[in-house]
Structure formats: structure tokens, C-alpha cells
Image 1 (cartoon, helix red, strand yellow):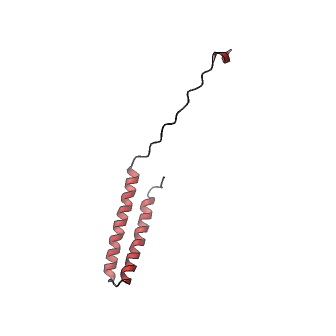
Image 2: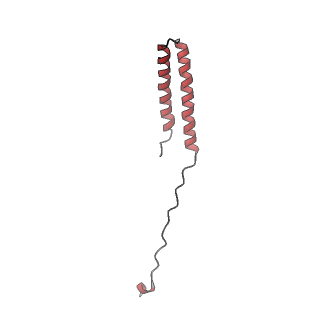
Image 3: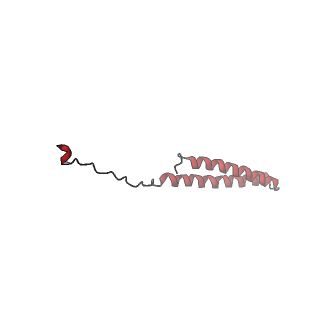
Length: 84
């Protein structure tokens, strides 16, 4: 499976933003003060973003998978009969 460069980090930031917005919304609905809800959302955003960029760094710095060598058949030698 191949991913374009920084795809994981890009989608990770979007997921982090969605989780943060959901955290603020759920916090306010539960009766938490707005500043505490935003602080918690920023914490979740940072954690998820760091995990996304860390995973991206691991994928970009890992060596590519080796493909098995392709066996090339030896060239067919002409027989003495075909040369005459």
C-alpha cells in the first residue's frame, strides 16, 4: 500500500480538528465552562496531530520493501545444426 507524501499527517490534522470541535461541543453541552472546554480541545488537537506527524515520519523514514529479484532466463544458444 502506498500513500502520497504527508497524506497521513494531512488527514490527521483534519481528524484532530474534528475531535477538538466535538470535544468543545460535548463539553459545553455537559455544562463545562467554555475556557476549560477549549483548553481540553487544544490538548486533544495537539496529541492527535503529534501522533499523525509521528506516524508520517515513521512511514517516510522506513526503508522501502524489497522486491524479490526477477529471474532472467539465460539467452538461448544456437545449436550447431541451425548454423549450417
